[in-house]
Length: 347
Ligand code: GDP
Ligand code: ZN
Image (tube, rainbow, N blue to C red; front, side, top):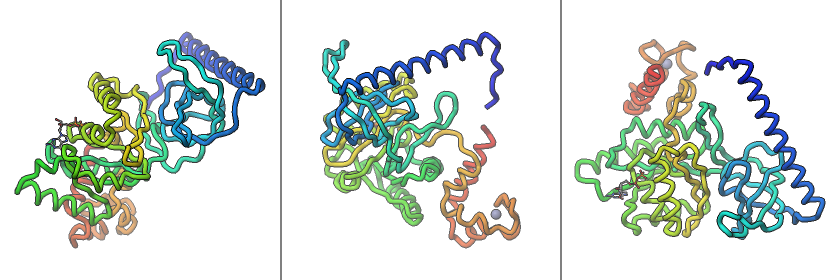
């Protein structure tokens, strides 16, 4: 993205804002260290960030007690899902709500096992959640799941190195025509090594295997609008109904990029990190290398073409075209790969 040239006055203003930010950070650090010196902070505890509010994070300890935590100045930015070491501080009264909350100071952030990133409003790719085990890609017969769209989500998941699982929801809407089509489609993905599951969010009895799958893991639910993500979450998190409703309501008003991701505990076990922004995961600009990386069966052949700059179109000795011809790469996946590359040049 081209940098806009700033005039003197703008540059001066930005500088001033930066200085003020730095001063605020120093003041915060001073307040915290004053508390520290006064012996007001307790022993170090392990916890996990379950929500993020500007300069503070909500951290939960192993007993699920919650703390409003400040961050040490050198920590960088934390995201929901981060595992941290923090020291509890005094209880504080929140004037607006009349509640008392525990406070604390985050001392250390532990290394992330994974990061889910997406572009911020300035088009910079930034992490929005950490330590996620699975991306649950929800699809449905209605709105119909096109293979090409599924592949786009899979490309995004492959590029985050988080395992995707394909969940077909609304199985009650399958009929004699669509059922075999979905069976075929899902078996193509299973052959590639992706897990698939079938559920109907309206029938809780159909969710048994899925609940087992979610247990002991941290998941995010992604997929196009209307496939039933909110309904699934409502069923799996009955007590959080209001919050989930509030989230989807916010997204309809277009405030999605500002709504923070939150970590929820499924009563049947396992955690969900959710935000409207996360639900849209994957539908943004990618580059050619990322697209190739996203198709695992194509990626591992790309080094074997005769020409190093092979476009895999009609070049002789193209390992990928040969594999398509032999049926080792499915034609559908190959045309999907081409299709996604084409849309890159259209943008
Ligand atoms: P989201 O946009 O992915 O969050 O989708 P919603 O949860 O808002 O669901 C979209 C529509 O699909 C709603 O009208 C739901 O009632 C409906 N829906 C969700 N799950 C099912 C299902 O398993 N079967 C059927 N028939 N409809 C469903
Ligand atoms: Zn080639």
